[in-house]
Amino acid sequence: MNRLRGLVRQLRRHVTVLVIPHTDLPLWRARFSLNFLVFAGLLWTGGTVLAGFIIGRHADYMITKADNQVMRAKMLYLATEVERSRSLLEMARATDRQMRVLLGMRDRRAIVEAEDAVGGPGMGDRTNLARLLSDNPARAPQAEIRRSLEALRLESQKRVASFQEIAWHITNERSLYRATPNIWPTAGRITSYFGYRFSPMSSGEVDADEFHPGVDIANEADTPIFATADGTVRHAGWHGGYGRLVLIEHGWGFSTAYGHTSKVLVKIGERVQRGRLIAYMGTTGRSTGNHLHYEVLRHGRPTNPLPYLKRPLADEPLN
Image (cartoon, rainbow, N blue to C red; front, side, top):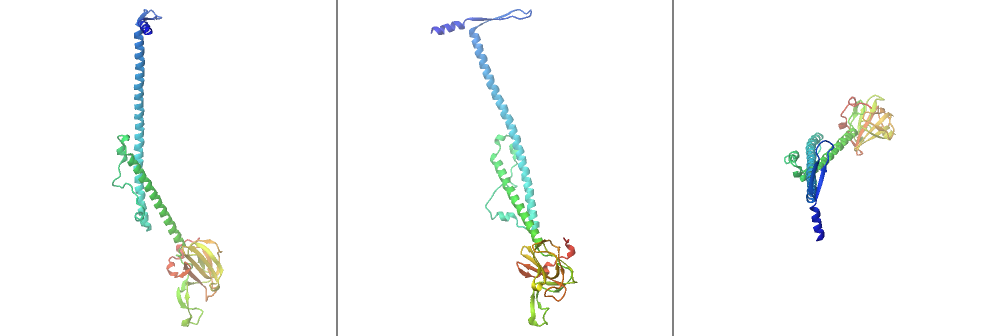
């Protein structure tokens, strides 16, 4: 109790503040009580703390506002890129359909019907994200953004898979074309066709007929003979009644045989291209004159070569 009274007496004391200028200005004196000084100090401290709090709140608000503006700009940019990517995917989808029509391929829409169900926004229900994000990013439909991005990802995967399938189809078609015999193997006239015939080695009796597994193309000796498709040489040399024979395996089940040649210009295992000079016409083996015995085999079985004699040699560049 005595201490409190002593403190009160101390606060009632006065303090004199003198300001002595270095110029001719008059001396300034002020007299304050300790109570007033303590109150002024507390008021200054409280004002400083309050001002710091207000400034801090305002600074946080400004920082948050700036962050929101940056985020809104990013979201608008993202929405624009999403719409641009969607437009490009629509162009890719249209191109996909056109290429499939031109190549005679099955539409992937028919394939998707047999697969697991998938979803995504269509042309009619797609929302303009830029318009939705222009006001307040806090109200931006995050689920819509995720849904759009997921739809774009799925559509991109389908386009990539489709174009890979188209590329595979084109590669296979090109490989099949290069493996299919479609040119004349040599110049000349056909003297014997595919099928049953009277044996040229017989006297012409009916019971002397035989099956001819190819066509005979006759011309002068040493007329050039060319490969009718790309392939690998499986035989190059003498083979019984064929005489000097070249057998080429082309792939896709196709093989071709060139018999009765006078000279073989390729080796076993050698890779040849369509139009490559491989031999010269002769009359080796079981033959009655200079000609080429030409066979087309499909999966090892002789087939009529006439449907494959579509193009003259002049149409195919010789390699």
